[in-house]
Image 1 (cartoon, rainbow, N blue to C red):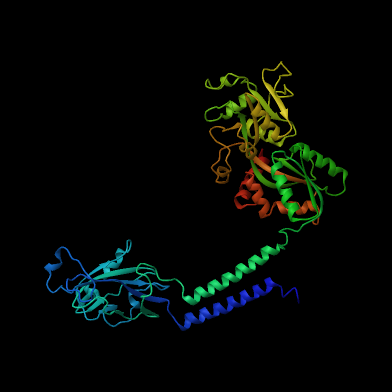
Image 2: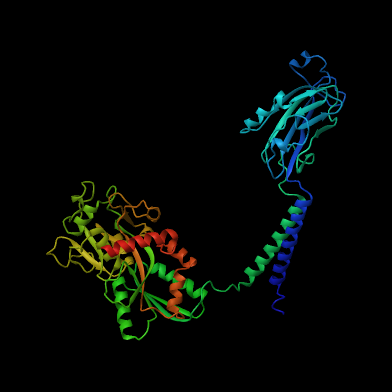
Length: 521
């Protein structure tokens, strides 16, 4: 009972009761007091223009005012007529029996002329101000036609009068079906009338205060249950070094949400990670607490390896900042370089420096390398490894210097530090570097936006898979983490690192297409 009477429960119940009562009152009010159709009017100007100022208000005139007779006590009135209700008003909504719809009465004054104005974009209103529609005046009475008005529309009448003082009574008379005609005298001349009544505004403020108070209590307590079914224990994430930054963030987010979970990230290359998982699984009876992430499909033929699509990853060619080919490289240029046919940069373009090409590659365990060979080269890298440190050539029998490194980060560091170097990397990690350059291929740059919108001819991208050995049990940390990767929070992390999550609507379609393409190859 004490738990039920907590502060947030009391406020929540109060908010619900107030909301139900307020809704009932508003429904009753709308039925009992129908004011959904309303025509309002207001006098925006009532000024003397004659020289005989009986009201005591000084007036200075200049020009043609004295040419008209009997205008010594002339006045000008600007009358605004507006639809300030919640529904449009048709010509059939006016209830009078006469041809005209409304009547403006100017007490103790005689109308000498009328001009009609309307805001920009409402020229159609002018078609209704004709004598045939009842528009006219006599003495101090002005007949206004049945003018249809959409919600918020208005028109103005500039009336020239004589025979009275400013401030004499001005009334608009007429009837509206299920509505009323009323003065808006309490509103400033050019302000719009309020959309809600005072009662409605009061109820809105009260409900808003209740909701804000409830939200403040909930946030302050911070006892929101985690968005997933948490499991405890230890789990190892291995495989792709290109996907390592994503895995580190996902592991940290899961551990923060789920106390008792210990997740280790041990990225060592796609092939190495999947191979270690397969070997460990073969020695165990169940599913090991290991998930191996791979750039592209596995190269190991083991039916017990279960694939889970995670994201589409984009990759890019990178070169040392001293190499700046205009427009990037053609696909044919890239293949010639990695076949060893181009040994100096000037062979591609006379504007490039005359220095040796240095190939900085990943080792054989790299999914990034395998995807580069499959999607870009359409073959293996033909140049053998001729250098251990990417600087000195250990094998002088081959004209090109080529080294192999174990991680994406090592490739980026080496390309940035080595003159004439070219390599490949996952896109987001390369984008963060300012000490090297990314290259377009055939004029197409690596772009997540282009890929998602289906306007991408860029070849170097592929699926990121998460592999388990057999299917993990439903109450295991492995299964819980895979479920977390498919949730909204994890999808935001994946997207923030420049990958396209396979669980989004667009991503699911693109991942399906890529998977079918990989199977066909």
